[in-house]
Length: 83
Image (cartoon, rainbow, N blue to C red; front, side, top):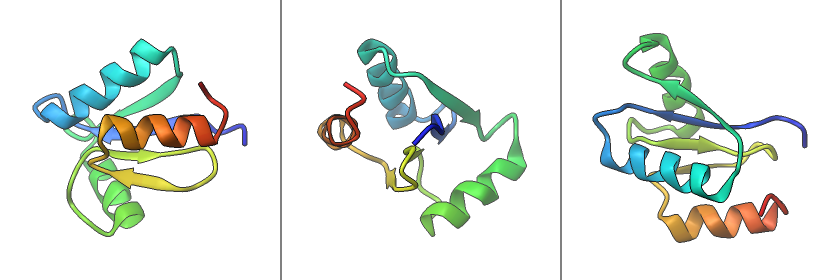
């Protein structure tokens, strides 16, 4: 599992900002894909999640969350031994 975490989101999205802040606060590196700056990435996020909701958080093991709570993210990070 060497792939970084990817967060597909937009600055106008409160949940996207919250999830990004949580990862930063926990010191977990991640790649942020700005769906406003990269409109084609919105289709990638939709293909991953099957939905248009954001954020889409993709983990190194290939799983993902859509609009996760902080508890969901923390549980997954612990499962992956990233925190």
